[in-house]
Image (tube, rainbow, N blue to C red; front, side, top):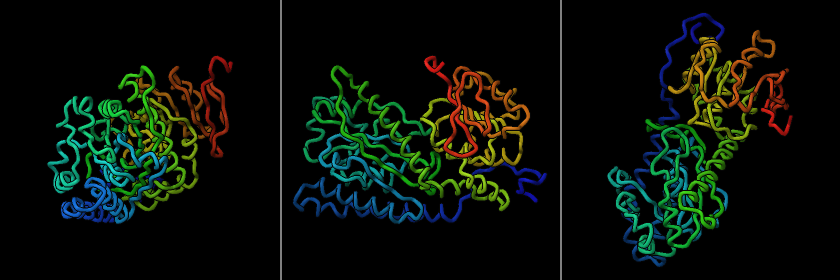
Length: 426
């Protein structure tokens, strides 16, 4: 029957994900609540002017209440905040990575009183612009270098109100945490205050670039300890040090979300539209928990290569952890290729039917072999794809490690992790 992975029926053309009822409900509830609070925030302004404690503190409290309610009414989107929350109490400069649109709602929901630094388009968008003007957000395009330096005390005149900055400048399109611009770090130096880093994870899975639909996800926000520049450290060096810390913590958060099952609904959502036999094949592979072996690997920078992809549960984990990475694939089963192209393959990924067809210089650092231990030619294929750049090989057991690698049991039975031996190991 069509859609049965065991049948020889023609494999359908790969299309974009269909929109299911959960996605429609998420989007309807989430956007309706967001628009309602954006339009009603200006009605609160007269009270903010007369209530004790300062206008900005009351506006921040109103925004915090409103944005948390947006998460509450969106059925399959949840938000959690933890870490050094006390650091936000009087924080003057807070910085965060910007991986998705839901980051803005999470930033407004954090404890403490602060405004946000936003681009011009935010003030022009409806109904977002209405709330941005009412809340007194700063337009980053209107600020001058002097506003970050000698004019810093005037930029943040209220000592009890801080500013939240996305130093990447815009939302990441490819999932990577891009270079942090130094403006916020210059501002912190001239105010003589520490920078409080905040890490966002999971929001990109909720609203993907190029789409407005809200998909199931869990957003985890972690507040890190305040940081100051080291002696003789430039603004750019300090910004890069903070960025490196954020990148590593974001990876840990994504691993936690996957390990604890908070993103299971999102993974199942990627199989929506499959026929029952195909969906069952994917489900059976998920239940084997083989994908958990990838959660034990240290964070990797560089391309991945899969020798066989099964029903895509392992490469999908890699795509969720490393949205920006190229994931190359050697696979000749048409139904498995259909699932791969439907769920995770992107334009930068090379998909071939044989190892010999792989282009040279792909920058592969991690190889995952899903072929069974007794598959013909497995050892030769593995040795053929391992270059000097490859540092980790994940294989089914029993496994003989490739030349120059040592093997340790994986966290999942039936899998082993082979790591390149260093000069001190040999």
